[in-house]
Image (cartoon, rainbow, N blue to C red):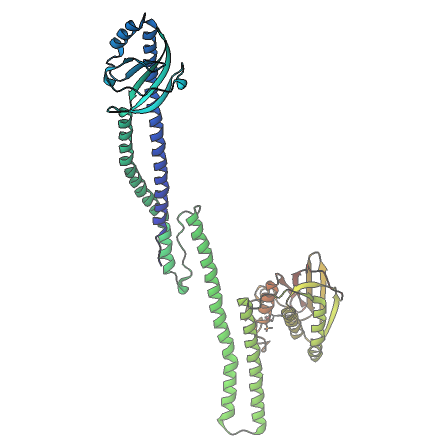
Length: 464
Ligand code: ADP
């Protein structure tokens, strides 16, 4: 199922975060305004009470007090007042209150300092009421001053209307802005997708556009370009390998075919048939060797034989291969011997390491003329192990040395008819799978020396 695009998701998240912030901001503004309005009302009430107290303190007697209060506070524009004795007997009440007495406070709660409370006065609505005790001409008195809260409520209501109407507009603008920004930021990604869709196996040499190599999308494009480059190279290698393999297979098959065709053209003697069959057998052996080697290389490439981690004594292994090849060396009249084989332990696959040793010794015998010598040695130095295979053979000239590990590369194909040019490529693949390296040093007509370097085994050595 296709979900919403990153662009929409980014805009959605951006909108949700902004909405939460706007709501939080509105609530804070509302609460702060409510508190500010209440403080202002209380301040005004406090000031009025001070004036009221002044009037009370100047009065000579109760009648004079009531007359003065009536004059100044009887019809106050905003506030209403009520003066009582501590016992609750009313001494003065402003006009608007008329018969509506303000509820009397609990006498213990009244003190010389002003206290505030919210009360709803029937017919007049909610009020903020200030209470204070005063010394009067006839003893202590309680004064109450009431301020209507309607104007505060109106101001708060207006604020809510403003916030509720402006908020969605701000949110809408921010969402539109967020969407445009997300679209602009992700536009290179769209171009990359379009370009990537155009790239097929045949067009792996194409590259993605890198708009800004320093930003994340630029780095992604560079990484993908690097990957495309590697894919292109390995596709190319694979194509070349397949073509070379097909070419190599064609030659023995063509020879086979012509041998058989010639043999079938007319009736031949038993001897001639035998000769033809021997040729067929030789070519079949060559084909088998080639296909075996191709299979081995494919396995190395696919990592099918992931390196087995086993302790292998390289010196023992080399000695065994020398013994196995002794007959071949004798046939060639080459002196094959094991030199100083230091005890060397590596971790890896004994079968594949044996293959490397075999290929190198086999080559050394093959490319060494009679009366020459082949010697194998092993050394242990620091954390590295080396297997050295040296011969006094025909050598490899400098211009060929960099290529001999390439697949199907043969220095002189005319001189080595049986060679496939895959042996050294297999050696290199195996050694590299063991985190090692293979090097060659050679001089024409003086001899060749192959050195395999592998990391020493970290597993403690066994008894032998
Ligand atoms: P091949 O099956 O032809 O021997 P390799 O991959 O084993 O293929 O070797 C590649 C080429 O390197 C050979 O054709 C040969 O010319 C050269 N070569 C390999 N080993 C030696 C050696 N010890 N002395 C001289 N030439 C060698």
